[in-house]
Length: 229
Ligand SMILES: [Zn+2]
Image (cartoon, rainbow, N blue to C red; front, side, top):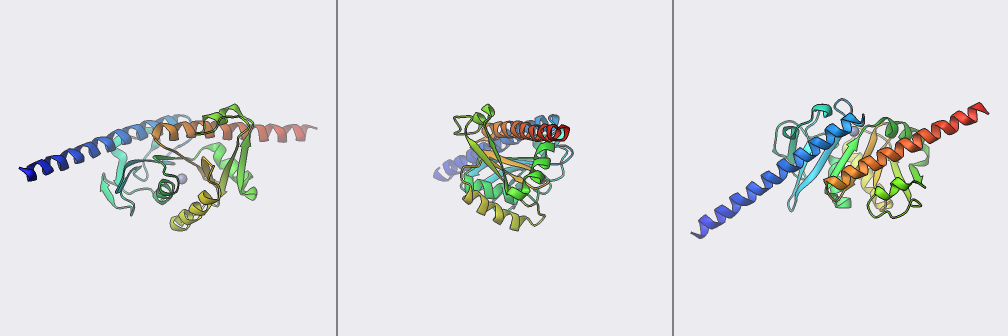
């Protein structure tokens, strides 16, 4: 009898983990298609993840090489903290190590990564300064715990690399150095941001992509005006 009860409990826990995974995968796929429509994750670029369980750690993450304009919930994997695949087919993105670093260092519930035009351009232009400062814009208030347009957001910029274990170590150091940052840029590559849950992470992508475009366009028109003088 006791055995039966514990088996039932085990099955129902498994069932709710499956439901949680499916729900998160559907939400992430929907976010991916919306980002594609905005031109932020063209082709197979970008990757998205969300926490299914923290103890032990289980992450729903995009399978590598999927076209983001046609992303579906079936194109997600469930992985553990050692990148073992527990559910789904395909391979996790090489950048999964960065997602795991953010989950550990920031307690993120979801991590979203885009390859937009403005994050690509600005991460090159500001690479020499090691980061991009953004302040004075009302839209900053869309970032968690930001109450004023006077907030100064600092988006650190990391050199791009294909050596993910090394990049993940560099990221951990940067996250410690800038505990207030809501995202970071990879040089010539794109934006990473996160949130306590998927809806907060999605809001952060929208806010930061808006701000990057504003800063980029403002830099462009300032240069244009200087050239016209
Ligand atoms: Zn990328």
